[in-house]
Image 1 (tube, rainbow, N blue to C red):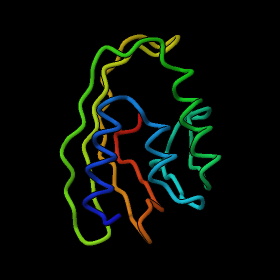
Image 2: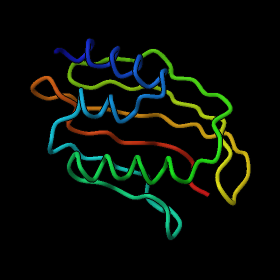
Image 3: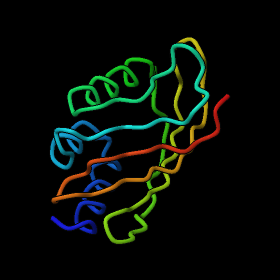
Image 4: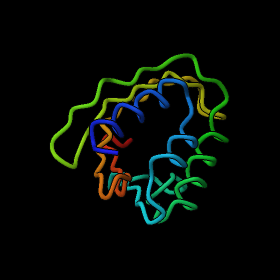
Length: 123
């Protein structure tokens, strides 16, 4: 698959809430997931390898009490890179309801996502 096809498929699966399905289908085994610097202690950090990315996603899901809504933008594509804006309205266990918003940037190599990096305000 080319970058545009992968980007559109990722958006489709994310809009359906099928994040792990997206990872299983679209990510390389050696993919990396990068969070912003300055995260508080106990926050989910970086992950290397698909198994670690799955686990990171499961840990995030376990922290969510309820999902009230969200959105995923259309992708912006540049050669082997693409980005999307992701927003979620969630209630986090022990932390209450919050709106989360981030820019997600992805790199594609050999028909698979090999790098994801998230940009959002910490704190």
